[in-house]
Length: 158
Image (spheres, helix red, strand yellow):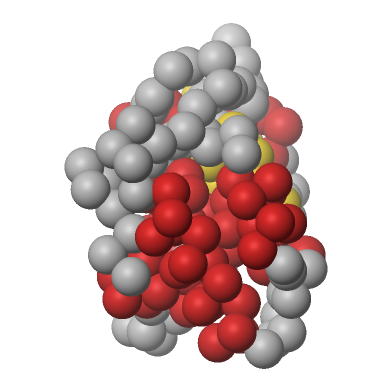
């Protein structure tokens, strides 16, 4: 039975009517038209579907939409502010930290969430924090470099 679910999406109050057990990923993509969040494995393993929920990275492919009731959800589309890319997004561009780009939204969202929690991270902490986001293209070194650059750019800003 469908229910109304209310949450903040990319800074805006959102209300949808849907099956409460529908995953957040499919609600974002199919009902709300936000296709930046990718379907990868469908089991929460690869990280392509990562969004921020209350500033914490979460796998949207495994999360029932009912679990975001009353919470703040940020997708890759909502990470920039006032037309300016988030420092992690800009660093990915500056470091050419992508090849096929499929994992990129999940990598960026995971990195942004990590830096919101702990703005100044060591290279090893960044590597460890991104370990569960998979990239098959081999851009890992550039991704780590980009996150290091973003951390310096953010200088601990929240």
